[in-house]
Image (cartoon, rainbow, N blue to C red; front, side, top):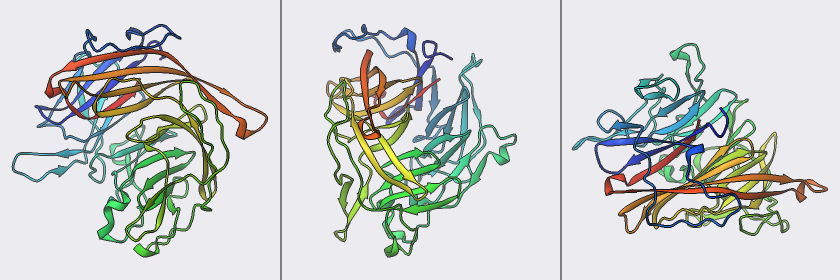
Length: 390
């Protein structure tokens, strides 16, 4: 399907009301877009309404805190948690499937269940036709691979070698703060350092020796990393020099831990990984990771753009690749003290220029178009926003 014919699915999870999630579909060619190259503005009055839900998932049937991924015309929904009044929450191992093609009644079907229940699971992939799914805390030790093309449900999910976590009192230190797929490596940044799952070898390595937890997973390499800083703006190129610029964080015992310099997921598009730099500034940056057989060795940073969404609170920004060389940033959140909920779709185009050597490479970004939608009512206040492109 071409980009012009593609759809952007906005999936919201709610804090109140009778539905756990709702699906809204926007046709890219129908967006109310500004002209290419014009200065974009977003008036808060008379904004178009967000399209009515294509699908609503009743809270009593479908758990909250599910995760979503698109593959081969289907949206898969994983895990989450059921909460009933007066009862303890129950994690879900269920998988549901929504077919985006030839589904006039918008039916949701059962899919093959995971081997282990997961709360707000992280879904990485695909690598080939395989996804990797785990809870948002490495200490949960529930990593599985999911093969949507498997010929039988029994073989769709496979439990993999688990994170070699030993201490029960330090779970919060292993919460996944950011993650990325680099070739055949799944890289996770936590308060205890950077950990890598090697897909081909089915094992783990660490950025530090975890002897204090009874773990010894080796090393990803030296402590020094090459970071190339860049200014911020709509059109940027790489500048600056080498420096040690991992994000440092003090552990409880005063030790400096190394963390990746972005939040949530880094997504690959045209040889670079893109992620947001912080939960406050929400500047999108491009990264080039240097890896060898031991794993992640260094990275370079290329400053990029900031989304233009009009929100005041509970802001969520998601980067959605639209190949080739196109992506959008979907910004959502509350406006006017929680009375109005806004969603902005900013579309961009990439161009890459290579210099005389690898370090002179830079990324150039131009804004193509933008559209903002509004929806009023407290019942529309989501806890999370997920976007998939079909």
